[in-house]
Amino acid sequence: MRSAHVLSLGLLLGSAACSPKLLPASASSDAVLIADAKQESDVRAAIVKSLAETKFATESEEGGLIRAKYQGGDEVIQIAVEYSGSQYRVRYLASEGLESQGNGADMLIQASYHKQVKNLKKHIERHLRGPDAQATDDAASTQPAEPAVDNRSPGQVIVDIIATVGYACTAEESRWVCAKPGDSWPITVSWVEEPGATTIWFDSYLTRAFAKRCGSFSNAVRDLAVPDHSFTASCNDDVQNFRLNTAVVYGADLDVTGWLKVHEADRATAASLLHSVRAIRK
Image 1 (cartoon, one colour):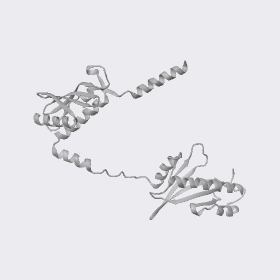
Image 2: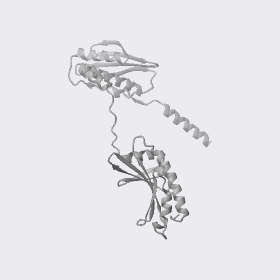
Image 3: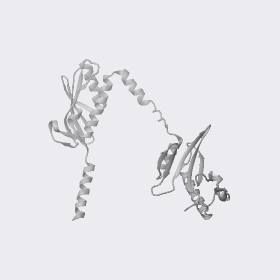
Image 4: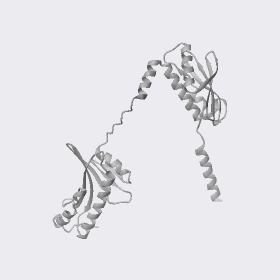
């Protein structure tokens, strides 16, 4: 019985998700004031042109009122446009092929009705503003959009890319500490800006063994360097740790995730070697 109830709930949720959004039909019927009062004939002309441009066919006219019908596929919408020299209003009359609920002032209608009315009003406003405004709109629509300006620092760009492969990063002054969930060995990301180039640093740290100072592990540290990978190791007695560093030059073609994997592999090799000579605490 429990599985039957779960199935029924799933069907109900699926049905609700597929139902079109309904909005009050009156939401699109508010009067639109015309900024600069015009001759009623000019308002009529703007409405008639706009109806034709938005595929509404004029069915009938009388003083200050135009009835029109839109038909697109299975959808049919009938409206009335009331107008004067100072305002106009679009009223819902009837429809076919659209979901609706209720009647009169409480009627709800499928959102696609409001989309058609909004498009119609946009055309009417454009014509009411005159040919100069139309020319400005046309010119604006043909001009290529200016590219968005990216104000992020190089470090922030790197961190955003790292986040796409599962790392969560926390800002700490001029660097970020990044780690994967459940991973206790974070990577620190920082950068150094110099004339003509910016260097990105991936750093990982290991705690040095208590018993011996860094000089005892000079050969091991030297053996850890991987020049082809820009990977180096260093030891600091003051903070009792090993720094494992990958340094790469920042640029648009920098393979961030590729270098991140290289650093992860090189630091794992370094940790294994340092552990074998008992240079680090496990």
